[in-house]
Amino acid sequence: MLGKHLTHRSLLVFIIALIAVVAFMPATSYANSGTIDVSTSLNVRAEPSNDAEVIGKLQGGQAIEIKEVNHDWGKIDYYGREGYISMVFVSGAQDSGSAQADVQQTSQSADATEGYVQVATSLNVRSTPDMSASVVDSLYNGDAVSILSIENNWAQIEHNGTTGYVSMDFITTSENEASYSLSPLKGKTIVIDAGHGGKDSGAIGDYFYEKSVVLSIALKTQAQLENMGANVIMTRDDDTFVALEARAAMSNAANASMFVSIHLNATSEEYVSGTEVYYYPDGDTSVQLASTVQENLSSQLGSIDRGTQAADFSVLRNTNAPAILAEIGYITNSAESANLATSSYQEKAASGIVQGLENYYQ
Image 1 (tube, rainbow, N blue to C red):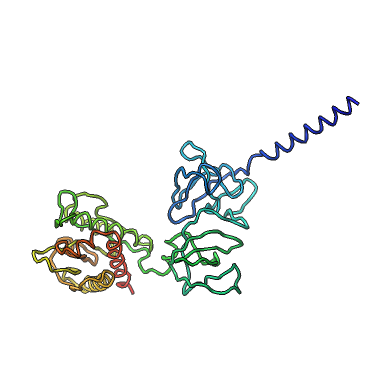
Image 2: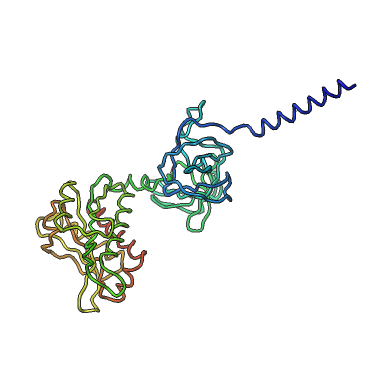
């Protein structure tokens, strides 16, 4: 009886040990690095849970070594600390026995991330993940949506308060890809020149210097152009003084397609406001560029259209490419100055410039 009891006891211990081993078996080991497949950034969490503390972020396109994967969460080394990321937004990771290029489960969910519509015309948003389901919204190329989950190649998305389903065949997590196919600016080298800088403050308003606002507009313009596939060269990207001749030389050395100098206007007459664009009177190309940018700037900002004018400015005269100098508004007009100080107005100014550059090629 004692021997039989020991045998049963040994068997019980073995079963418990086996269960423990299975429960705590290491997750799948990954041999390769993966690439973060989001347009902005991806949260790194302390635990494999959407509710866990965020300990950092990874940028879109960043390569990261995936140590192991468990239930759609990838374990990584985040600057010496153990961290976890959703594998929904990691591409290119492979395990030692798989040639699958993208990690894609039947059902996926994680922190909402941005996606971008990539279609020639429009994309239907449906009430359920089915082609026969009712249409609840329509999306257009370049529209940004929040991806809530992915299942069987259908993405549950949210757009302007409406939640529905779209095919992942028409969604990219890269804003660049959504814009590239339709923008004539793809591959163009464009110089963006933020006027003044450093010891040269430019015009002085009640609350800010010209050099600060034009730099902000220039950086926003850079971001929009790069999202369209343009190669952007900045004459300055911080509060640095750059000589006028050096600005033109940068453009010439890069064999740029276009040169855009961004400024604010000033006058002793406080009631004067509006937008105007200058060009060097040497050929038709700069005249045409000035016209398209002025039209779109004024339209975007809702400002007074002061037209285009010829001017013998150094940055225009010494630049080989079609070149313009855009005066976004008057720092000496109280209402316009208040607008110029806001990020939303600066973004509109950038959009007006970019749309004008696009129209120049159309």
